[in-house]
Amino acid sequence: MNELYRLVDVMKRLRSPGGCPWDREQTHESLKPYLLEEAYEVLSAIDMQDDEEIKEELGDLLLQIVFHAQLADEENRFSIDDVAESIVKKLIRRHPHVFSEVKVNGSEEVLRNWEKIKKDEGKKSALDGVPPTLPALLKARRVQEKAKRVGFDWDNAQGAFEKVAEEVNELRKAIAEGKKGTVAEELGDLLFSIVNVSRFLDVDAEDALRKTINKFMARFRFIEEKIEKNGKKSIENHTLGELDLLWEKAKHEQE
Image (spheres, rainbow, N blue to C red):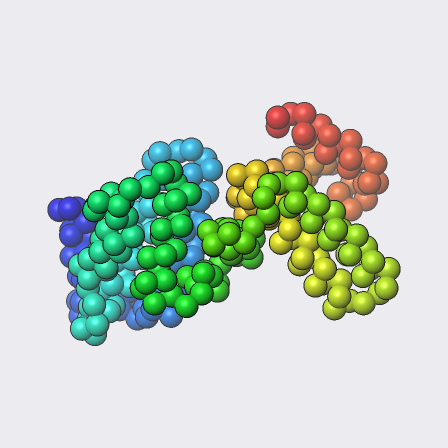
């Protein structure tokens, strides 16, 4: 706790009249991109499985929280202590099976109780609490998970798989009819149904896609490096067959 409050004091100093001009210019709005960026940096560090990197990136993310709390404190709205108090109260309130006498049988019942408690707190819909700015794949999963907690879900993965096949056929039909708006809608339905399958498989679609993108980028850069070393012609002047051969080589060497 001493180091945490030292961070709070450092932030206060940076925002003080004799502090940093850049820090003094910041607002909640101006800091929004950094909050999101630092969260993604933490995800990247976790993917790297590097404890030092995770520690550093969590620190950067914590700084953003302290920064926002400091801005609010200066306007006598709330402090970092109020932020901590708020989450402590929420955790205790939503975990009666830990902090009171409520008994539960497994994590599924915990989640059902969680939704009931949120209803008692004034939530009007089971879907309340899903941030509108979440990345689409992650948002789809959160919506599906919340629907599941009130019983609106497939009985098993088979139903989700069948829905994917149905949406593929509807997308093909929309493409054949040449209706651009319908194609976009059907593609969205297909992506939503694929997230449903990933949920049943206990695979995070957002995380899986991010890793696939990183894999694609690594293999593509491998191709660029090989072509650069060859020095005869640019990537644009290679045939698709030549690029496919390099792609397969990248897969083999990077596995």
